[in-house]
Image (cartoon, rainbow, N blue to C red; front, side, top):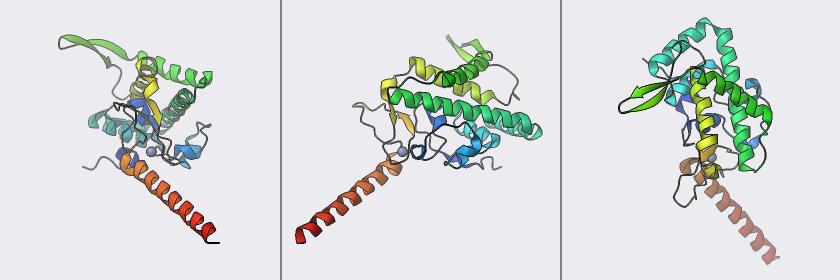
Length: 227
Ligand SMILES: [Zn+2]
């Protein structure tokens, strides 16, 4: 049975952190200034998340819910479209708040308190579902709550965002150097030299762009020299 239909379920996961991959569910982020939380406004901007069902498929793709959970959430979401719509709005608000916070970190600015409030609200909801449990010789966190809770993927995403902001190495946070790409990733390279979200995409495109720019400059120089 074909489960994945959404383009969100085919997205590259190159951020190195769940929260960064979630922020990267918008293509060409660099080409607009991220202000609104409105999904419809984001749709114009290469947004891969068009509705709740895209969010579910992406979440399975990213490994935060199982295939079984995904099918169950899709079923419940279809039965409760208004609730699913609200969860989707919260997801987009969380994503854009995280994006603006990371962007502020990258540009040495203070994040807006309203964005911290959004992340904290989701974090609080997530924490109410967190439970310490025995795993092998140690302990681990697991999520409790009904399998049909439509917002269960947001718990993992909010948790990842908060973990990364508090315990991650933010000096390794990068924005892709590709023109208009704007994807974020964690640079784990030894010499901190990763420039692209994905070499085959942005890296090669940028090389071609620079090559053409050099060629154009060369042609201009030759022209002015021949005058
Ligand atoms: Zn890129």
